[in-house]
Amino acid sequence: MAWADKVKLCVDWREGDRERLAQLRAWLDAECDDIIDELAERLIKSNGAQSLMKNARFTRRLHGVLREWLDGLFEAPFDNGGVERRRALGQKLADVDLTFEDVILLEGMTRQRLFALAQDQLDEHSLELLSTMHALNKAMTYDRGLIYSGCLDLHDEELENTLLDRFLTVTGFSPTLYESLVEAWRWNQSRIGHR
Image (cartoon, rainbow, N blue to C red; front, side, top):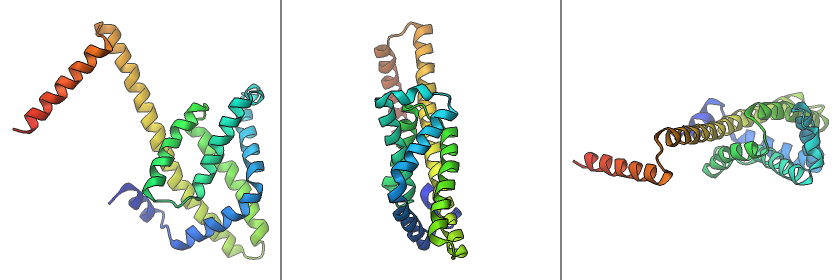
């Protein structure tokens, strides 16, 4: 069973959840730009980096990543293309200096805004409001796992590069020599495996 299928089973994802998210997404469309502006402003403020908001290029990149994060919450969860896109989002978050902790803050701030939005639409239907927010929580739980996995991949890659740099410094090997040694080792391992 694939990881996405396990998560789908664990969060008890149902077709009705997909419909509720689609409805919530439709309500969000009119306010999406305002919500993204607010999320960006609150994140920058919480990180003590208000001066970055004066940099138009950074602001565009940050808004783009936040829009991708928010849009991704409403895409069809559990499809294979979505899995890779959400894992890759970890790299994009790091590129604008957002951490996994910032993702958790984003979720909290977004949940508040989306709850208020859903409440405005469903004020007399408390069971439907509860079901809509429950579907959002399921999607956020799944999404958080994918983004965390992407962040771990990025961390592992950075650690591997740091260790490689140290190894090359200590041994005096050139990167080319190191790559040749690794290639020879892999070739030898494949020969041993074929016996």
